[in-house]
Image (cartoon, rainbow, N blue to C red; front, side):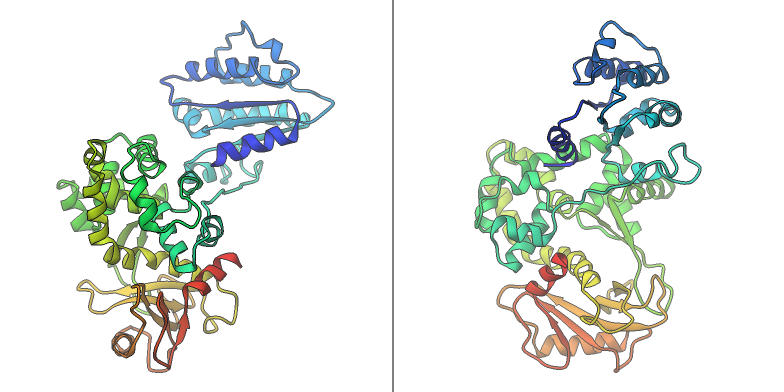
Length: 433
């Protein structure tokens, strides 16, 4: 279902001696070490009998004891899950692990797997100047793509993208979605069940990252409610001071929970806008998290009615990031030559606001390669009125002229000529490729 389950499955299929240790948010390093010794004592390592009764006072002693328990004549696997917790309780853990790895573990046929959900922290472990620099191979395990969702649930391309906007491609949630069921059918069951993965996954994810009333949590919830500019986020978060808000946003962007985007054109801009990066968390913060109390008291019907009333407008904006990523993935020849980045364009007053802008680089382009619009309504094709609006917007985009090609991404087809149409099926094909 996730990284830990994936590694557990690998270890079981490898059928070699192994230790799987999962750290938790213990108050001290000593508590983590005690749990590590307990896990090692019950592991399948040949030297597991060395651990009962041992009370190493440091990670250096515990990891050296681990090295003594590893086999010399056959492969073994050691898994350190939730590694960011270990570093949080003992900042010296990283250097200690590197020292024991170089002196002891690297001399044995052992595979060391370190797992963590904090992507920024895990990637930083391999950075220049850090103890583990160039010692590790990085593997990022992403959620399932919209194409995977379509295959797993047996849905059409457009329906699969809608399902992706709700689930974020998280396997635990998709596993509860009956094959072939529509979005409304799934939500009717999931939203009225307080224990469904759709409801509890967001709560668990946020609880693991931030205390409920911490400033990053308040700022994230403000962004999740739909606020996208610095001043509006500050107001929605209860008047957070500018310096505190800047620190919270920096933390959220460093953790890649929030994305910061600027308009893409040939002219510099400071009109930064913020959005929740993960589709599922964006949906949860908008429609589910604020209303958990009413769901828990048996009034999920109120939540469903609220979702139904706001779904079309919310989906129209939420799908933009999915479309842009799909266009970035299209093989050469599907978009105008020279397209290396895909973004959007807006002004302070949103006049104009352009869904899609292709360019040769970002954040300030040398050349605009295309402009485009996204129409994601049912039974509402991209028509002559949409074309006229796109033409006007193109004329007001810095760096664009009447020679710049146009693209229309439409859920329900395109009824005009003079531009390149992109269908939901094309988007899924891009994710498959």
